[in-house]
Image (cartoon, rainbow, N blue to C red; front, side):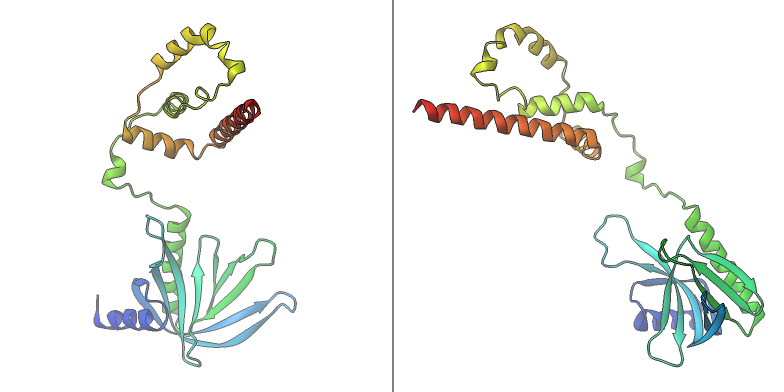
Length: 248
C-alpha cells in the first residue's frame, strides 16, 4: 500500500467509519461534486457536497453473527462541511456515464421512486476509473463467490429427518409417557408394534443430535409437529391431574 493511500485509509477510518478495511482499487478520485435529481421538476440540483471520492469496504465490527458482515460505501470527504457524505453501494444500483457525470440510480424503498444522483468529475480519467471499480464491485455483489471454510468442506453425516424426529421423540418419551387410564387398555395390543418401532429408531450421538436439531428447526412442519406434541402432553397431564384431584 502506497503512502498516499495509507494516509487516505487512516483518514477515512478516523472521520467516517472505524470499520473501513480497504479502499477499493487503492484509488481515490481527487475532486468530485454531488448532484441530486428531482423527478417532479426533472431538474438537477447541485449540492454543497464536494471533495475526494473513495469506494471502500466496511466490516461490521458490531455484528453478532458468525460470518463477517461486510458492505461497500461510496464516501465523499466534504470540503464544505465536517459532515462527510456516504452511501451504501448495493447490487441494486444502476450506473451510467454521461460525460462529465457518473449517474447512479437505485431504489432505496421499493414503494417509492428511484433515487438518482449525479457525480461530476472534472477529470475524465478519474470518472472512467471510478466507473470501472464500481462495475467490478457491482458484478461481485450480483454474483457472490461462496467461500467454503475447511471445516465446512468436511463431509457431514446424512440425517434422515423422519428417523431423527422419531429418535428424538422416543428419547424424550414424547407421546409415550403421557398415556392416561383410557389409553392404558390399548398398551398390550400395541406393545409389539411399539417394540418393533423402537428397535428401528436410530441412536443419535451428540453431533448427530445437533445436526438433526439444526436441520429440523428450520422446517415449519417440524415446528407444527413439536407444538402439536406439546399440546397433547399438556392436555393429557392436565386431565390426569384433574382426575387425581377429583379422587381425593
